[in-house]
Length: 306
Image 1 (spheres, helix red, strand yellow):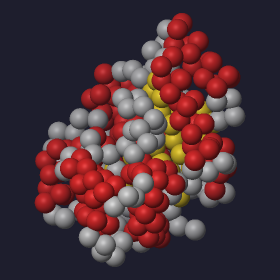
Image 2 (cartoon, helix red, strand yellow):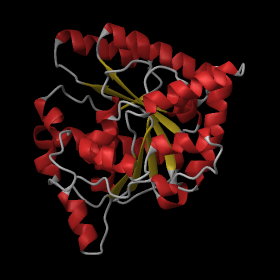
Image 3 (cartoon, one colour):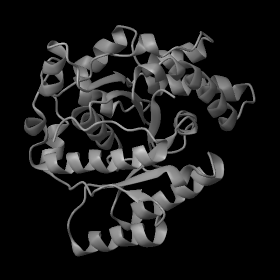
Image 4 (cartoon, helix red, strand yellow):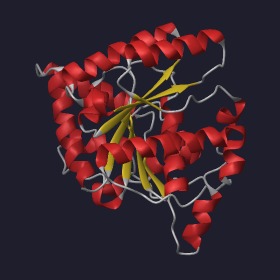
């Protein structure tokens, strides 16, 4: 079968989508030894910056790597192949680096990074496409076909592909969702995000695949342990999305912010050093998602670190 594709997506921005992507990439690589490929389709390039740093993102772009060049393939009608565009080392954890140095790789993270230049590319693409009487839905379908062929070259190389989708329902986001085997919804425990998450879920079932909501893993991020937040989280689980699998709540914490700040492209930290006070939350997130993944796919991976 090759790699499982999991899209991280929500209608609303600012809900911890990229942070969840990085935590899952690190957690699955560290605890289960998975070979993870992160694909950043969001022009904000947040998950790319978290894994590579700003300097690394720019260097990747100048080397002809990343999602911007994948989009360029599409716009120039070139053969679809994402493999040459991958940055093969997006590892930030010292344990993974040392295992690789000893020729005993136990978990790895690679990335197809984004770049802010994609904003302009998307505008150019949409203007050209719509000027020829094409529709957003047709553009999404064309992008899906191109990405599907491009990612086929990656599936034999990885255990899981995590697609960090743009917010809203742009053709890029719709293309990423259309390719997914399962999807992950980060959200925040407040009334606005709950309403938006419910709308997004309904739209997914009506427009992407009727059974895709059954393959949904929900993560409540930036959780404040207040009476209001607990009530909203309970309503989300019991009233709106009571048929979904929920991961652990990820607390709002300075430790999370610090974990996402890589000092330099060649800097590494231990898992404990990187995640500090939220290391247990990242472990629980990886464990809960692994259980969900194994149930959905029938595939099993051995836990190699505790």
